Amino acid sequence: MNLQFNQKRLDARVPEARLESAPAPTRERTPGPAQDACIETAHRFGDGLVGVITRPDGVASKIGVLLLNAGLTRHTGPFRAHVDIARMLAAQGFAVLRFDQSGLGDSELPGKASGERRHRETDAAMRLLAQEAGAERFVLCGLCSGADDAFHVGAVDPRVAGAILLDGVAYPTPGFWVRHALPRLLDFGKVLRFLMSRRNPRPSLSDFRDWPARAQAQRMVADMVARDTRLLFVFTGGAYHYFNHRAQLPASLGRAAQEKQVSLEFWREYDHTFYLRKHRRVLLARIAAWMREQFGDAGTP
Image (tube, rainbow, N blue to C red; front, side, top):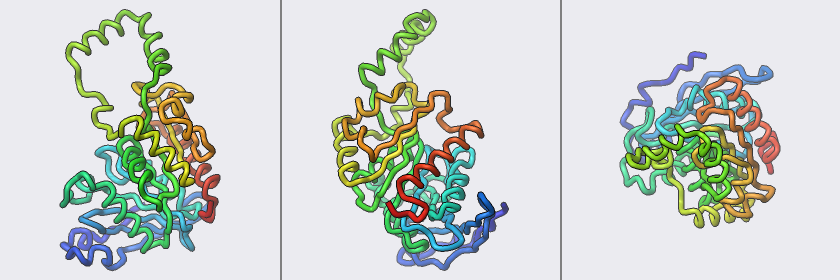
């Protein structure tokens, strides 16, 4: 599909007070699964943020979905996964906003301190989706750093009804280290490379993650479960350096991670970015099923 954005509107220097009330941009209907249709609109909102709302061609659910940037990837997501997720969920009746957080993709650099960035920008995204599609509560979805942002916001914002955390927060446990180390002890080359890496440590993926202290993360999960926030954790082989078994989730995040509000998938053979099309199809099917199970096609728990 060739979606025509109104580039002049996106580039216009709209005064701060009018950012949320800019005229509605160009619309185009998109064929979706089972010959359903969705409508996609481009928006500029908040402090220079840009995003695309995908909504059903009809009344939308009161549950809206926000797709957060994965690392430095634009709002299309790795291998356009966010586009596929948005259109799939719109066919189920959910309005979805995929947007670029400040300094990424089409959005401007942040104008305020970064410490409050994710809460401020997620709040602006929620208000936009409420204004445009009538959403009242929200599901946050993100991969890697996007999952970190979803976890932090979901723990403190009562409007968050659920979160989909792809390779999200977890912590190595004694069981993790046993499973991780034993196979490698039998490989002299791996042992030598490990010892060399300790002499010249390099940045690892965990150095770029934004996780709270483990005890705090356990409290955050417990608070979300007590508030009946639904959580879907999906771990891939890309998380091998910190997650390698299903039993590790409650071992690292506490007993609340075993409650009915928490769902878990561990796909060891999958890549961190779901670069194989067949793996993305499985991911979309799991998200679709989870959304139906937790919120129904009408978006009511």
